[in-house]
Image (cartoon, rainbow, N blue to C red; front, top):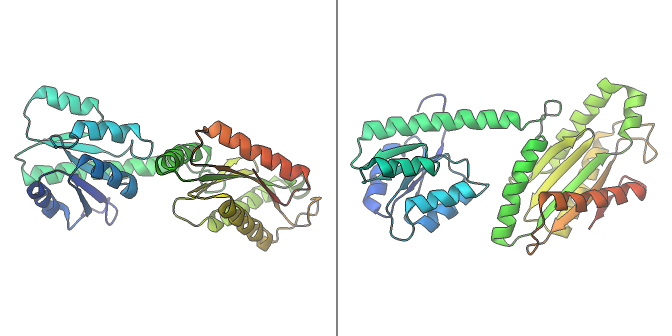
Amino acid sequence: MQHFLKAHPKLLIVDDQPLNIRVLRELFRSDCEVYMATSGEQALQLSRDLAPDLILLDVIMADMDGHEVCRRLKAAPETKDTPVIFVTGKDHVDDEAIGFELGAVDYIRKPFNSVVVRARVMNHLKLKLQSDLLREMAMVDGLTGITNRRGFDERFEAARAHARREQRPLSLLMIDIDYFKKYNDLYGHQQGDQCLRDVAQAIKAAVCRPHDQACRFGGEEFAVLLPDTDEAGALKVAQKLHAAIAQLSIEHHASDAAKIVTLSIGAAVRLPSSTASLEQHLKWADEQLYRAKNEGRNRTCIQ
């Protein structure tokens, strides 16, 4: 495969005719991780679970047609940016127009030419990679190298949708470096920037599950998003964060909490039955962060 593509992009082929799937799979199995779905519901589930780089979607299927599958993909935060190529035996300009209106990036008609199909798929995989790189760059904090507020907001909406769909808890940690203004006043802004970088990387390293997300929220404030995590799990992660920052042993003689850099953490758990928005969840966590500061800092408070 061309050098501009990652080693094994994920390709999801959706068709209720096994023969069509086999033909397409043979075209791409040496270059892609090929996954197959034979129904609309299965396609939606795999799209959520696998996060494919591209979907080849048959329009005419028995249980749910490709147009409805595409509508649902584009309506869900976690799949809305996944490119879809419609594959169909229909040969009418109106059908093609409907596909593009639904958000498809291309349209392939059956019977298809293998060379043409391969070229189109490779081109769209290249575009997907470029889009992913640009999106990642836009969601990285320039100073610390971790996810920024924009990236956090996007991940939160996807995690919230997952929690609601799977009926799972969602925990949020809001984190402040204790007495950071005093740190800057004593050690200078250049050293303050290095402190932020060190703390950010320690937080990121301590938050190690694939779907967990650490970000710089702004200034000396950080946030950690913990899908599928209840109160006990949130407290366990908070304890890891306190330990990780203590291990850095960054001198802070201006702090009233300790003589090294410490954290105050506010935690809020969104239960499966909750319909709380991002703003409400942030409010709950902020209230606990405020409480942690009032109670002496260098601690975690949880709702």
